[in-house]
Length: 228
Image 1 (cartoon, rainbow, N blue to C red):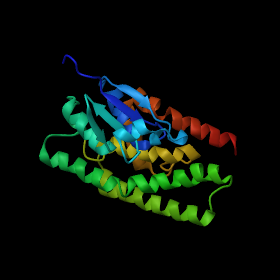
Image 2: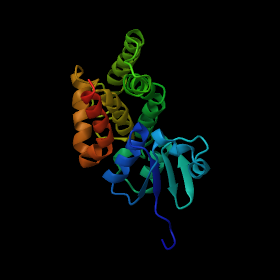
Image 3: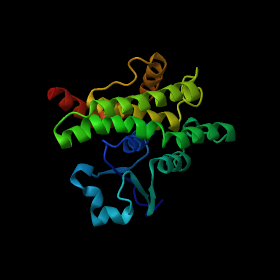
Image 4: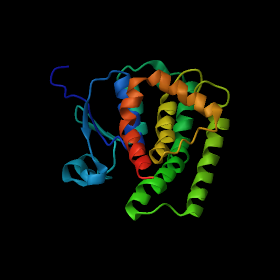
């Protein structure tokens, strides 16, 4: 359409929700411009960025003047408005409801409990110059493992993907969170064969877009290993 501005996304790829949006756009070959926002440098607090999102969080999408925040909303908007394959966010009410069911659960389960381990082992350890308190870390690991039990028993069950036979936005959001503790060299699925097989299926579908988005996390892991 004449005069239409290119889709823009504002992201920091150390952020799990940002990686999900980045992967979705690249995998589905949706034309867009990436604007990197370095959270560690405080770039999310600049007046320009704050004008897009007063909450000063990433990701942010700007589509021809339409500004949208929150990864869940952004992904569903992109899947609906950019003719992504049906499986990502199905139109059949029952199938769509399954995706919505997971994404509603995701924000108070998968996301906080996986992120907490990364924050303790990597971010806070770096800021404080010492490893996390063992007791607090064990408590966080326990909460994370309870979450993984539920992810496997309530959602994955015996299906190839979280919501059925095909990959959906639920799998994309989940895998980006599950990967986060890897920044502290912690593979949280290594003793969970069902979830590990699910992860392999997701990676097999996403291919290069997965590795490209997670490159920064791999570098954090390598730096973590080098300091041991």
